Image (cartoon, rainbow, N blue to C red; front, top):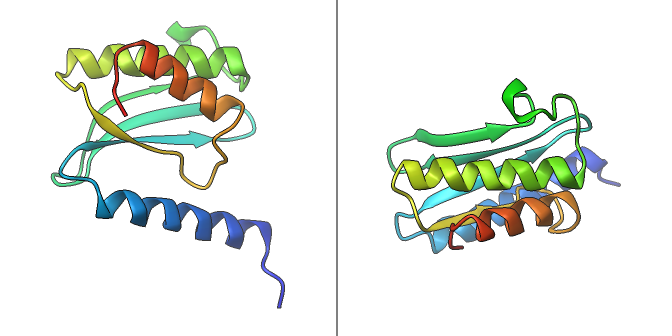
Length: 119
């Protein structure tokens, strides 16, 4: 029986998340979600179940409303790093979800690293 694209995506996402959970050591998780029109990132504390910081192209002040390109992903990465520093976070794990670490997801990760986040 063939798996659908959605089922394969969910399997990939769970596989990545379970690997991160095994080596988390209480650090926060930088979770990325990419849709056809937008990209977003959240810094999540899984122990307390709280989102510490978030950034998305849905925010009007970023100027990338409804855009999902590498430039917008870089801006979201820089903003999430800035907001993480304001919250007192320096280290986290990068949770790419079911997305490949390539293109927009990689651009977001690189911009977050340049902004001062370590993962």
